[in-house]
Image 1 (tube, protein in one colour):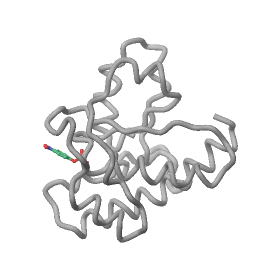
Image 2 (cartoon, rainbow, N blue to C red; image 1 turned 180 degrees about the horizontal axis):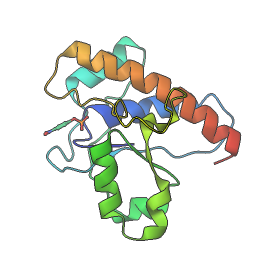
Image 3 (cartoon, rainbow, N blue to C red; image 1 turned 90 degrees about the horizontal axis):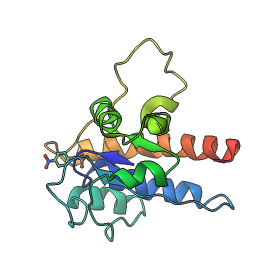
Image 4 (cartoon, protein in one colour; image 1 turned 45 degrees about the vertical axis):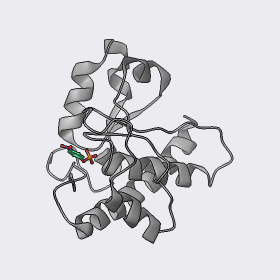
Length: 156
Ligand code: 4NP
């Protein structure tokens, strides 16, 4: 799960994806990272922790890190929170063979018809208020539930 700072969106996405995949009897590894390094070593943003807590999810133990070349090898999927992160992940791919692993997390929505590139972002709530974080949480809850079902159904 990859966003810009790895303190607002991707920590929520990591927590939710773990929660979703835990519903299935499978082995998996989920982590999150940022493309920017401003907050490395920090816990998630207090507002992300609070909104997750409101929904019974504890993400407070997570530690911010940046995306590394090894992640492209290690993980089957790199989920970008928005189109800008998607582009950065593509640019930083150490090898073209990994490009197919990079997915826009919004690209699971059934309403997406392939022609409209708007609404493909989980909006960055960093400069927003708690309500913006709640909107992000609801979006990610829905997206992670759909991705978990899909990943389990295709076995990877
Ligand atoms: P995130 O939000 O990418 O969802 O973690 C941000 C967090 C920090 C910054 C930008 C976005 N920042 O500029 O420090």
